[in-house]
Every structure is written in C-alpha cells, then in structure tokens.
Length: 421
Ligand code: NAP
Image (cartoon, rainbow, N blue to C red; front, side):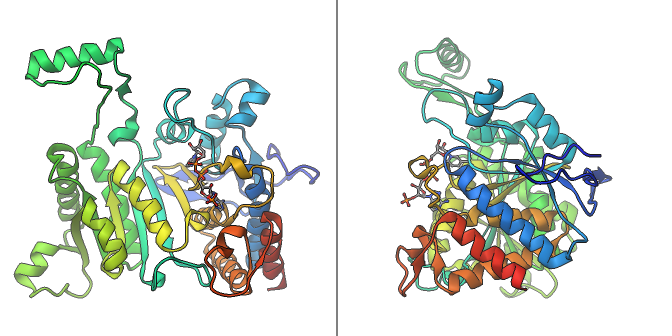
C-alpha cells in the first residue's frame, strides 16, 4: 500500500501498512500508517517539533527496522479552509481505517458557534476512555514541594455525562417544552429563563470505563483504583457510577481486587498481597487528596466532568499542561492528543512547549507496543530539561539558571540526544 502522505519534501513511503484489529488485539506492522491532525493555533508549531522527536525515538529504539508513515488528515481551521468543513467525513474514515491517530489542539468557541470538534471526534469514534497519566518529570518546576509524590493515571469517561451535549439555550422551544414536561409530569419547577442540560450516566458506559481502568491497573502493577464521584448529591448518576464501578470490580475481577470495606472489615486495614484495592472518593475531597495525600491514589476512574477538572488540576501540580499527555481510547480505535488548547496568542511564534504532544506520542507508541521507543523519548526529554534547555513555560518558576529555547529548538535538542544514543 502506498497511500501514506509523507511530510512535505520527503520520499513517499511505499512499504507502509495499516494497523489491524482482530479479536480485541492490534496487529502492528513494522511501518504502520498513522494519521495525524496538526491542530489549530500553536498546533503546527508543536506538531513539527514533536514528529521529529517521535521519529528519532523510533529510530533510536529499532534502527531502520521500524518507522512510522505519518498520514496527514484534516480537521479544524485547516479543513475549513481547504475543504469547507471543520470535520470532514474523510478524516473520520481515515482514522477508522488506520485505527490509531494523534492530534494537536482544535479551536472551540465558548457559548455559541459549532460544538467542540474534540467532543465530536470522541463521540463519532466512541472513544469512551480519556486516559491522562500525570507524573512529574525531572527538572520541571512545580508549585508543590514534592511533585514526585503524584503519579496517577486518570480514566475519565468520555462520551456521557454533560459532555454528551444534551442541552438547549434559555427560551428555546426545546427548553420550554422540556420545562413544561418536567412541571406537568414530575412537578419539577424550572425558572423560565433557565437553559437546560441533561446528564446521562449509564451502567454500560460506567462498566466499560471502570473495566479499562482496572485492566490497566492490573497490567501495570498499580496498587489501587479510586472511583471518583459526586454521588452524595447526584445520587442516580454519580452515585450510580460508584455503585456500578464496585459491582463491575466484584463481578469481573473478584479474585484479584478487594474493596476498602472488605480491607477494613476482614484484613485489619491492610490490603492483602496480590490484590488491587478498589476505593472511592467524593470529587471535592479528591482535589484535596491530590495535594495532601497523593500517594494514596494511583489509578482514578471518573465521570466526564469530574475527570476533566481533576486532569488539569493534577497537571498543574506537576508543572502545568504544557507537559500533560492524553489519549482517547475505545474498542479498536484510539486518538492521542495534546491536552492543552490552541493557545492562540502564541500561534506561529515557535514558542510554546511541545511536551504534551510529544508525550501523547509516547502514549501512542506504548499503545502499539513500541514501549522501547517511548522510554527512550521520555529519557531524552528529561535529560534535555535537566540540562536546562527549556521552553518559556518551564523557565517560569525555575529555581536555577535555564536557557529559554523555541519550540523547534527544544524538539531538536531532544531529537539530537536520541540520535546520539
Ligand atoms: P489553552 O489553549 O490551553 O491556553 C491557556 C494557556 O495555557 C496559554 O495561554 C498558556 O499559558 C498555557 N499553554 C497552553 N498550551 C501550552 C503549551 N503548549 N506550552 C506552554 N503553555 C501552554 O486554553 P484556552 O486559551 O482556554 O483555549 C484556547 C482554545 O483551545 C479554545 O478554542 C479551546 O476550546 C481550545 N481547546 C482545545 C483543546 C483540545 O483540542 N483538546 C483543549 C482545551 C482547549 P500562559 O499564557 O500563561 O503561558
């Protein structure tokens, strides 16, 4: 197959193949075609730097035996300009065909305008788990004294909850009709000038998310999964999320997991060896725990909105969203992405940190089983920061002398380390 779009000026890749998916397992050729969306705003800057690092990491780990054939697909402003639509069907088809993709940030206006492209992508491909590993990287300035204590992986439900997008503006026909229905049928009073949104959380949606979190924790030797919820107030959505999470753990992983209640009642407060602890925390206290008792949490499973807030708060503790990667994963499809936005005021300035998209690429490499390349990149990234060559955001708050470098120079420095071995 030869349909992989090579970077501008490069020789087209002729031996590239598609990643396959059979019986729940990815089949990854030595030269997989991987679609990428450059992104809006600072997206092109960070992607240019990141792709050099990712290619250098694969080359460092596998010599010429493996490489990635990047295939550009369009979304956002570039798609609008070239083909007149923000999310072309062709882009979704290409991601479906190739299974695994990576993207830069895409613009979403607040209030009116089009619905988020990111949300649309997640929903159309049913990428139900947003996975956000958060840990400290050597040399990154943090507002906390011991940022290294925080080492968590957040599994955030990605397609339900208020992000399902079931909401209407105040005064609209839909809102007024729903308001009447609620009043007549259930005696519920809603002000006439209110907007209305609906928050669906299902048993099936919760179970598949928590299943993924538990599978991850078991596969990576993590000690616990914390189910985060606001079930004291929203009993039949967030509270049910907790109950369904425990139920799933009991039913499908009963011989390998143990609940906090069982630990307290039958094991004197100590988790027995070989068991994964399943615990839960109310969302507001979870924010405190991130700061005060981070070592008590390892993998978090959360509904959409709580997971959203927690992910950025956790990223702040370890030094900011410039270094926070993410992946949106479903059954058979995965799209990895920089977790920050388009930072439009810096667009085209070759200034911002490409760390988030680089580390999202590391997640992609792990996802396709190329862990060696991912490890090499993380090590070169940490060494570059430790050597004091950093983008402006990592210089801010640094308690040592550092040299502020451009996006491209930061990427080059990492790629050079990888090439040097
Ligand atoms: P943002 O683009 O993430 O930028 C907020 C601030 O975060 C920036 O001003 C900058 O802070 C810092 N920042 C962001 N990216 C950085 C990077 N690579 N390196 C260093 N610092 C970085 O958030 P926003 O301004 O709220 O959103 C802008 C647009 O992006 C909106 O349209 C929003 O909807 C969209 N968005 C997209 C995604 C996505 O595609 N997944 C996610 C979030 C937001 P300082 O100026 O203080 O240095």
